[in-house]
Length: 262
Image 1: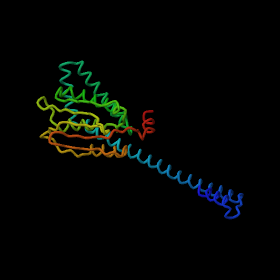
Image 2 (image 1 turned 30 degrees about the horizontal axis):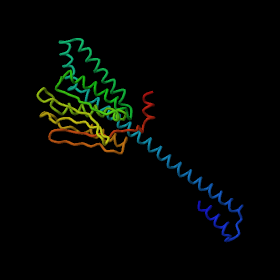
Image 3 (image 1 turned 30 degrees about the vertical axis):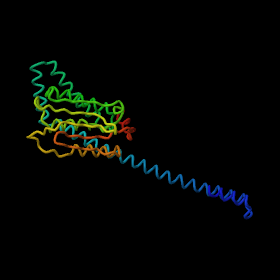
Image 4 (image 1 turned 90 degrees about the vertical axis):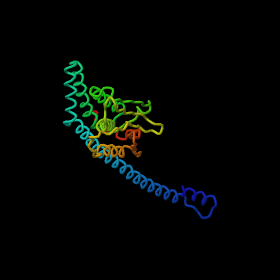
């Protein structure tokens, strides 16, 4: 652009004799060199972004594996199996049809964990399907003492979430709080106008509860850091425990998800 401006100034002001052939030859040579340099610069930039994308996808995959391990570890332990078998025994004595349904739901629950846990991001409805299965299982044990209140907008249901995130949060709430007819545990899932998915439960810490390691929460925070620039927010008051998760509107790892589903 600067060269063209100089050309017109020289040509029409007659400041000195202009050899147009030489000018245009040098102009196109310099323009060509500039374009080559620009292409190289852009190529390096896009290569860097592609490499960064691969590194982020690899890191997210490692976090997903850790998440699946932590969820399975928290579920397949003597305490969980003991309570599940007690519930199953009671159902067999009372209603064999309900017992068979309970076993089928448990099988489906673990199948969902294994199927969805390998993907970097899944849709929020897929995560909710797993939560609903877990909720039905726990209701067999706690009845109305455990309540799950889901109130999500249509816009929220079109977003993505790292797999097993809600599962880990709901499981932690049940694990660390008293759940009884006198002290029912209520977990609320809702989205906000500033694009956050909130998981909130009333706080009634078990007296015999052992302090947690915080591994699950750290895992969730780390996976969100790979998927979005927005931060996970945690707040605990005297009466409630709240976690606000950023709604992920774009799946940056869609190619990995498609490959995993195949």
